[in-house]
Image (cartoon, rainbow, N blue to C red; front, side):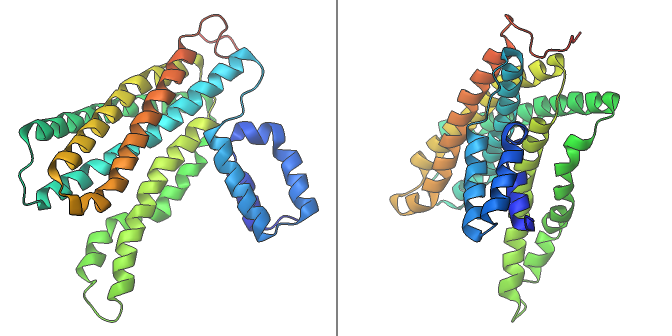
Length: 281
């Protein structure tokens, strides 16, 4: 029998991968045993499977999977850029040097662009929710249950920080106040992406999601440019060690959003074969 750790590692693979290789991989784990090294290899393989999704041979299903992967990636990059913006604003507010007006205007544009992209994502989520309600298939939404235990850590974080000065538990209270919201933010970024890859929306909804990803990618790229300009122009050399990870996140998010949204839009506009094999109206 496969233990819980190996079973969770197997479940971490994308649905498209499990459909084709799930049974074979599970049988292989049963034969070799669920050692810690095997579980680690499974997790690394799951990460590779998400980065390079397995596409079926059929043209229609291939386009569907490409659009789903694009929508999921765009959501994650939008969350990354959304989390970076307040950090950059905090860094600039603590700096003794004034922020150039052009950089400040770029940050304002990036903020409005992210809000607009959030509205676009909300419309896409509502369309997906309405279709799931019409079909009656809610199994794909189960990963969102993980948000329930992590949400309280976000809500009580300010209260924990207020009591973090009480010894001798101040260290652990402060750690929980930081790690709890971090776990919630990571969950918010990951679980909707998993839901998108598990759903089978109609061609109309899937095209809407994929094409709207272009606007979201534009917002993420605008945010990346603004954050890079702000941190390079407004931070001294001594602070570069702190700002370099933020710069790396924004650049990576912008590049991933542009590439993935472009591929998703190309698949959405492909009309030689229908997106799915069923007749969608």
